[in-house]
Image (cartoon, rainbow, N blue to C red; front, side, top):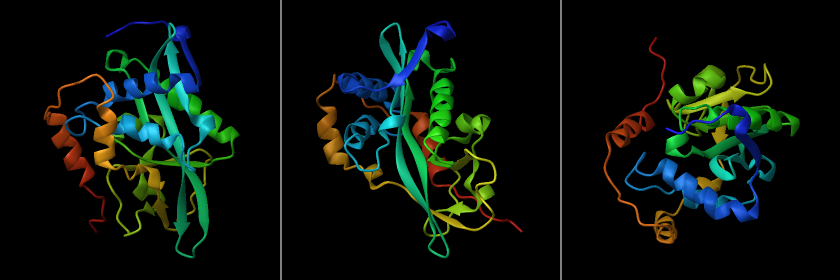
Length: 221
C-alpha cells in the first residue's frame, strides 16, 4: 500500500493524452475481480465516443504526475408509469490502482463528481455496485425510492443517490441505462490484446459477485 498526503492528490478532467494510461489503471483495478480478466477498460474506450457520455464528469485522480484513479459518467433515464421521463446519471467504471485502494482516493473522486453533477443540473444517480462501498456516500437501495428495472425487479446491487433531497415522491420509476454498457465481449477481448499480458484466474470474489448480481429485494410481508 502506498502512502500520500491528501493535498498531493489532484482531481482534474481526463485529457486525450490520458486515454491509454486511464485504460491501464482501469484494467489493473478490475482484473480478475468480477470474472477472469476484465472488460471495463474496453468499456471506457468506447464510452468516450458515445452520445450518452458526460465529458464534464470524466475525471482522474493524479498523484505525482501519475494517474491513480478515475471515474466516468453516462446519462441514463428513469421513466414512470405514466411515461414521464427524467434524465439522471450513472457512473462506471470508477477505479483506483490496487496499491492505492482503501486510502480515500475513490471517495474524493466521487464526492468531487457529485458536487460537479449538481452544478450541471442533475438530481439523481443510479448505479450497480456493492452496497458496502457506497452506502456511506449516501446511496440507498433502489427499493427505498421505488426505482426498478423494466421488469419490475429490484436488484440488490442497484443503488440510488439523491443529489437533491426529495427528488423521489414514491411513484414507481423504471431505470434505463445507456446502451454503451452492452459490451461486445469478443471486441473487448480483441482490445485487451493491445495491453501487456496478464494471467486470467478464477478468484473467490467472482463467486461473491455472482451471488450479489443474481439477488433481488422483495417484500416478505
